Image 1 (tube, rainbow, N blue to C red):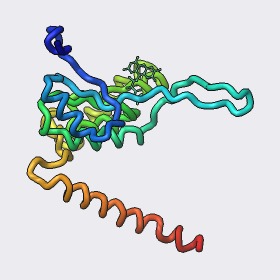
Image 2: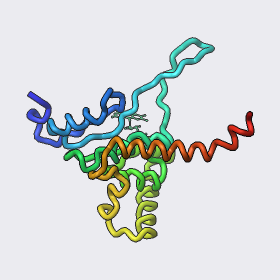
Image 3: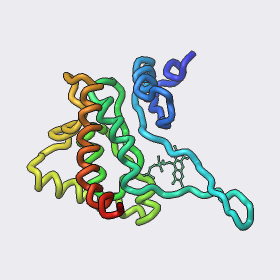
Image 4: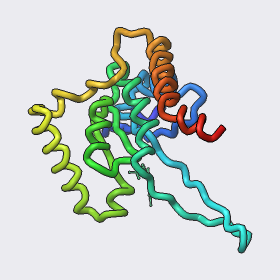
Length: 183
Ligand SMILES: Cc1cc2nc3c(=O)[nH]c(=O)nc-3n(C[C@H](O)[C@H](O)[C@H](O)COP(=O)(O)O)c2cc1C
């Protein structure tokens, strides 16, 4: 008997990104009835104190850039799975909330920012989102949710390749001067 048969409440699965084929894993969970996919869990990763030769069991709080990987996958899964998509990792500012919604998240979560700035930070995130929507002329979140998701009618591999080439071209123009001046 599966979890879905055993309970009557919705089942959300919090996932790690470390599957050999994450997209296929997400699709299978969706096919087996998961109601929500939460991207991504962060593994507990102890550090090492080289003086005391001891493990240091601590949890690093995330920063804004941690949101890039979950957002990339949310934008790829948007419109391709039935399950709700929740984004967790790297939500520090209201811009991070906006980015997750543009990628296609149904839900945006934050832990590190609340630990860093206190529970009242949640109101700042919501306030910032509202101001952005006003500035951009959006009346509801559904007006822009998934706006930057991978379109359904494109060849996924070509789309990825195109993004890769664009990123490399940009990297080249950003780092070229530095690379040349170092030679
Ligand atoms: C101190 C701490 C405790 C956490 N405990 C749990 C937990 O018990 N279960 C869980 O699913 N995630 C737990 N998390 C992970 C968070 O829910 C969240 O997915 C992760 O920190 C990424 O989001 P963030 O960038 O907003 O911190 C914990 C995170 C922190 C920092």
